Image (cartoon, rainbow, N blue to C red):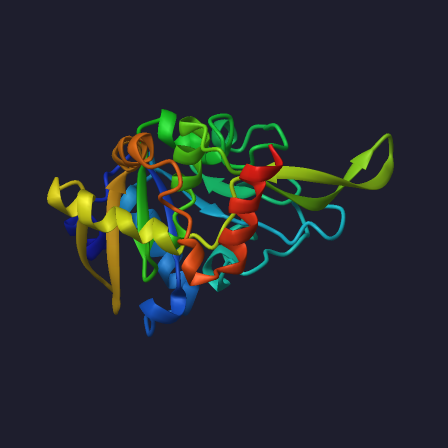
Length: 250
């Protein structure tokens, strides 16, 4: 698998943000831990591996013990490994291992969770790569960074439990949230410009892009159509309808 990752274009010594579905990758030797070893081998000792470890925000977040929510078994095992750092955002945390892990997981504002001053933003600033392994751009959090940079006109608030003056309190955190299905529209322009490498890793289709290319292409699209990533009203997508309703509230 490490050979497949290098053939795909994973840079030794680079920064790699991974979104993965182990169900799509399997079966592989040693399961998810085998996948993590392959990713580390492909990156080499000087590389930094990053994964989302987001939580449901329904209880106080402890980066040393709070489990992930809907992130998959690979990300859940990753943050628990020795030497892996985890960021402290109460809902939108990431984990990283490697020379740049501390920088990537440094404290960030509560909102937006995936803005320029966040792990996703720092991967972008460090000219990192994004690997979608067995998943689509619908799971690509770097596109939320593009929305933040574009200043899209929609924003949805979600409750999240945080500690304030030693007590647990619920606060509302604003983010550009929606169903994210239309993030998959990035496939076509990235392929057309030869900015997306695709191939098999394990048994899964993998997409590899530079974070800066993903953001640059998304910003071009959003400049001409700011609501591009929201499902059209006639599709009656509940999440996108809530985001669209926020336009009328502002």
